[in-house]
Length: 137
Image (cartoon, helix red, strand yellow):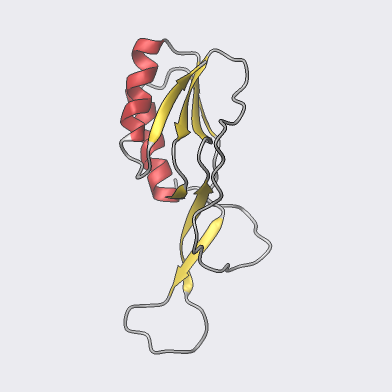
């Protein structure tokens, strides 16, 4: 199921033009024995891309352990129909995106051994269009 917010302040937003501000430091990940998928660059992730990565990770770990999703697509991107003429308002909401800054954890995987967790996160990272690294705590 695609993720999107239950309620937003406005129905439609301006389309994101620039990339989010990138920070050089990694966000705090906690002191648990876990693996995290951390971004190396800034960008936007679609709800479908996050869901594809989540399904791939869950399939690889055979539904063991606990997988946390730390990002939520909360920016609505709308577009008009292909053959629509100019005017008559803004188009329908097409999809939702999440703004991701560099050094931010996207997924966190708990309670699983490294021989199974690291390849699962690597296969999930292959589904996403930005550079990622696996951070082990």
